[in-house]
Image 1 (cartoon, one colour):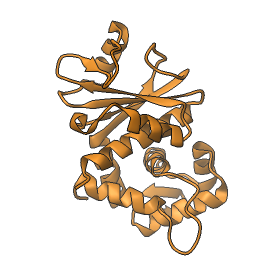
Image 2 (image 1 turned 90 degrees about the horizontal axis):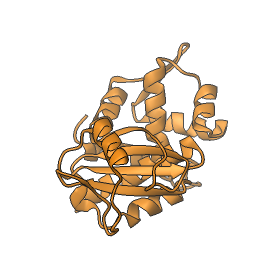
Image 3 (image 1 turned 180 degrees about the vertical axis):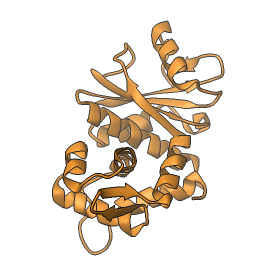
Image 4 (image 1 turned 90 degrees about the vertical axis):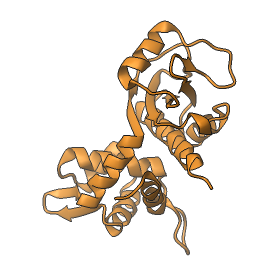
Length: 211
C-alpha cells in the first residue's frame, strides 16, 4: 500500500455512490471501523459485524461487497478476514490516525468521548469549525479540536485553557509532536462519539492533501 492519500482514496471509493442508485447507508468512518473490527476479530460473520456497527444487514452486505471488491477482505467458512492489502491499509491509517476512548472533560460537549490524533495536521486547521461540523453530520454532539504547538495544547480560535489534568491525559495517551492535532468527538453514545471523531479526522486528512 502506498501513501495515506492512496488509503483515503480507497476508503472514499468504498463509501461513495455508484451510478445509478442511492449512496450507501454508511460513511467513510464506518469503513475504517469495519476494517478495525474485522482485523481484530480474526474471522467474523456479517451478523456480528452488523451488531457492532449498528447497521442493517442489507447495508452490511453492501459494505462487505465493496471491501471485498477492493481486495481488502476475504470470506471463508471461518468468517471475514482482512487480506494483506486490508492489513496494509489499516496499518497506514493507524500511522496517521491514532485513536482511543477519552474521559469526560470540561472542554468537551458530551458524556462519552473518543479522541483521534492526526499527525502533522496543525497547518490545516482553521478554527476547528470544519471538524465540529463533520462530527455533527456523522451523528455526534460535536467535536473539540486541539493543536499541539510543541509545549502546550491550543484550541484554535478560542481563548480557553486546557485544564492540567486533561492536558496530561492527552499528552500521556498520545505523546504528540509539534503540529499534531487531537480531535475529541463527543456524544451520549460511545459509537456515535467514535464515528464523529473519525469523520472529523478524515475531513482533516483530506484537507491536508487538497491541491
